[in-house]
Every structure is written in structure tokens, then in C-alpha cells.
Image (tube, rainbow, N blue to C red; front, side, top):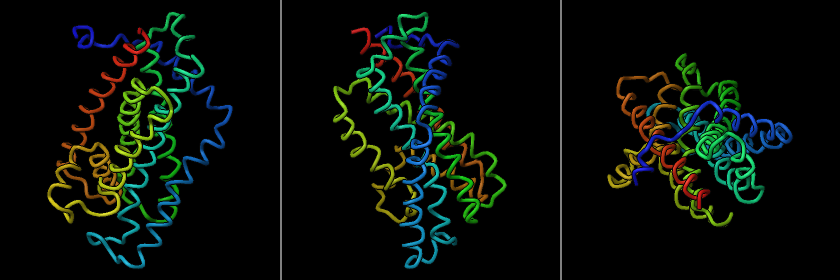
Length: 260
């Protein structure tokens, strides 16, 4: 227990792990980018252009403009989650990359931290690719948009850390069906992307407050619409604390698994 409370021993060598993951990704980055782009664009077309014919506006804005900020931040969630779930599990169990790295001066905790940073990078890249598409279609016009990259980076770290916690316990690839079905999918549909949470039963709104994607969507929508206020600091603080906690737990649990 005392070891768990000790701060992770993470130094600059974690960046070397990030570089290793980046270099490996360069070998197949084109199909990877296509996959990251296709799903959010599909949701935007299906829900935005489809339902917008039946839902005229939400909160005084066209429905497609309402969902666009949530779609872009969810793309960061999905990319970071998949990378630190399936990608990290492959490196840890199938390819034994973790084992190969830790025989060098890089320690276990730095390997985990490097993987979290790489998962966050994948989330950041995915969102940054979607963002200009939304701007091109005139769905986001606020000058506050310049702060979006900071949000994407924070969201990437947050969801990468969550996924790596699951990886620390995953016995096989099949285990991730529980995480994506019971955690990621509910967040996607009940975090305010497709409808205002205040229109839902109170218990749904209360449950949504505990979902990290809810706070990311709230900030993303505020930056997209220009409706920025000090109340957003609460969402940002929630995300910062949650990211710190989950990254700490992820690094410690990965270390515990590999030491065994």
C-alpha cells in the first residue's frame, strides 16, 4: 500500500518510450488516420445531417452545430482509448515490448507513462484532424477555438490513462468488450453529445456528472460556441484531478502486473 502511494518514478526516459511508439506508428499511419477520421465523420453525417431534418434546433442553435463539438472530443476519447487498450495490451503481452524495454535503463513506470503520452497523442491527432473539417463546414466559428488543442491534449491523457488501467487487468483482448460496452459507449451516448442533459431525468444528469466525457464535451461546446464563462473552470479542474488520479493508478497497476 505504501508503494502505491509513493509518487511514480517517471523521468525523461518516458519520452523515449513515446518516441518508440511514434516511430512504430509511422509505418502504418495512413490506414490508422483513415480509421480515426471515418467514425466521427460517419456519426456527424448520420446524426447531424440526418436528424437535423427532424430536430430544428437545440438551445437556439442548429442540431448539427450542437453535436459537432461533442463529436470532435469523442474522437479524441476513442483514439486514446483504443491505443492504450488494444495497442498497449499488444505491446505488453503479445509482442513483449514492455519486457524488452525494461531491460534497458527505462523503468516500468516510465514505460507506462510513455504509453499514456502516446495514447494521448493519438487522441490529440484524431481530434485535430476532425477540427478543420468542422470549421470548413461552418460548424465552429468561435475565436475561442484556439484553445481547443489544450483541451484535446488533456482529454487524450485522461482517456489514455483510463484505458491503461483496464489493460493492467486484461487477461485477453476479449476483456475489452466489457470496457467499451459498459464504460465507453454509455459515455458516448449520455455525456451530452447528442442531447442536452437537462432534458433527461435527474438521475441521468447526476450520473453523467461523474463521466469524464461530460466535462470534456461541456468545455468543447463552450469553446465552439464562444459561450465561455468561469463555470468552465469547474469542468477543467475536474478533468485535471481525474487525469492525475487515473494516470497515477494506471502506472502503479501496470508496474504491479509486470512485477508479478
